[in-house]
Length: 227
Ligand SMILES: [Mg+2]
Image (cartoon, rainbow, N blue to C red; front, side, top):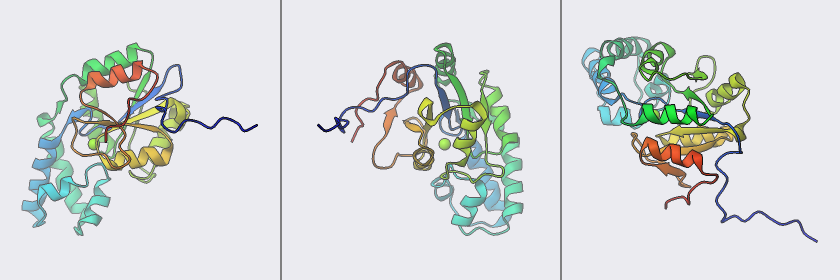
């Protein structure tokens, strides 16, 4: 007698029952930082003569800055990063939490889950933005010694730091690079449809507003993936 095979058409369970670790990307998921990044990139173009449109830069969002510079063949990365970082701090007031995200974070923690952040943004720029959200994050990971996204390292480091299994964790991102990192970390992925990018194939679960994520976490299974 053969063991029953899992039904491939059945919706995969979103998370194991019980409390979970819900990890978020920062830019494009928690906080709308696009005006800050646009301003910082314009400064890079003006001060360093980098002839790359912001739209081309933005296609690589989610990866570490130095990796993006390598992809765009930009040289003098240290100087460019210094300019970009300085303007990002100067113009941080242009960033805004996405509508509904603060309430969603409160609801998710009230439901018994822990929340955390896995971002490519340097810690010194991430922490002030996260402070505005007024939520207790169990973990905030940015690449230091680890490889950045799409490598799974920072997600795995967040799991280790919080003593979590991949099966008890979820990553909410807005770029295909987030989706790939989650896949490589064996962590379930939900795409924030209010962010800056499109997911890759196979299409993951997509939520269109933060409240929809709260509802998704309250049910035991993923909705059917939208084609
Ligand atoms: Mg993002």
